[in-house]
Image (cartoon, rainbow, N blue to C red; front, side, top):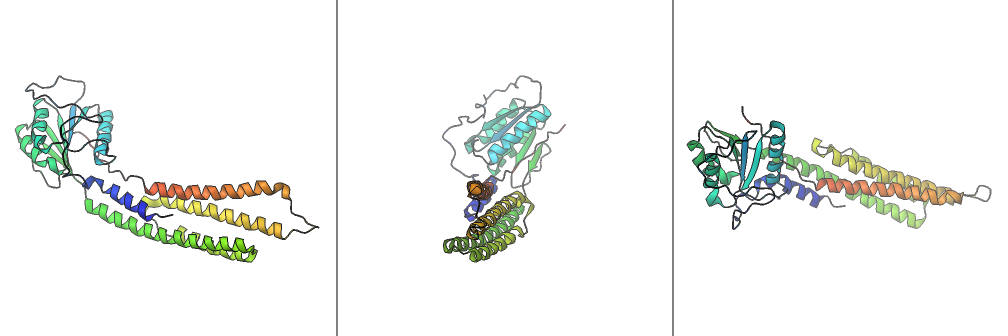
Amino acid sequence: MKKALALMLVLTLSLSLLAGCGGSPAASLAPDSGAQAAPAASQEPAPASGGRRVVMVIPQSLGDSGPMDSLKQNLEKAAGEFGLETSIYEALEPSQHEEVVRTFAREGVDMIICAMPTMVEALKAVAPEFPDTKFCMVFPLEEIEMDNVVCVDFATWEGYYLCGVLAGHMTKVNQAVEELNTRLGEFDEAVAQESVVNMRNAANSAFEAIDALAAIDTPDAMKDLQTNYVDGCNKLKDALNSYIDLYTEISSATEEAPFDFSAYDGRVKEIQDAYNEGIDKLKAADEEALKDLVIEVFYEPAD
């Protein structure tokens, strides 16, 4: 089982917030995936509603399973917790960022949230014109010194450090699993030789590899993943031990003490089930390694 590829995918996803800032814009400002239609260039404020109105303007499309969707999820969370009226607008054309933000400000929106460095200049141009409107700039990569602007940025270097820690851990896991695979191959050879002694020696050797895997120092972020690997290996250990026990009983049976073949099918099924469960847990560990590391942006509106 190759975890290296899985690891690289995880690391790529974990850094997705940094990607796409300068991508080619879409041909139009058509809304998508829950984003609202383009605002009318009206000088009149929007009709009053029961809660404060918050609009998020994003320069990339929703549906990326990454930073834009994470922003949307947390905006919805804030709406539920604080009784906000929220909406999202996809401003995919950089040339229109400033006018889109200005239009929402003219409508009397209580807070306008912009995201990514490509929207910094638009916010810096519009915010001074509307001192009573609150603005939030997510991931600006610079300080914006304005009384009505709050910036939310990320210590990306800490993410790089974490990626290095995870990469180092997965390298050790890869090595341990590869060694286990080698020793399980030796067990297969012992079975082909029909040698109980060689089976036991090969199994003990495999168990040493399993113990080495369990002993790897694991970062907190990888605890569940490590547990799946270890649990899967332990199930394989149970299956190997049970197989050796069964083979030993059959090979040592005599006419005076025959083997009870009436229980044979049931015991073989138990061994197979333990083996399958071990494989399933190892597969679960690989699937866990492929999950997105979601970066959440928590927003709490000012009073």
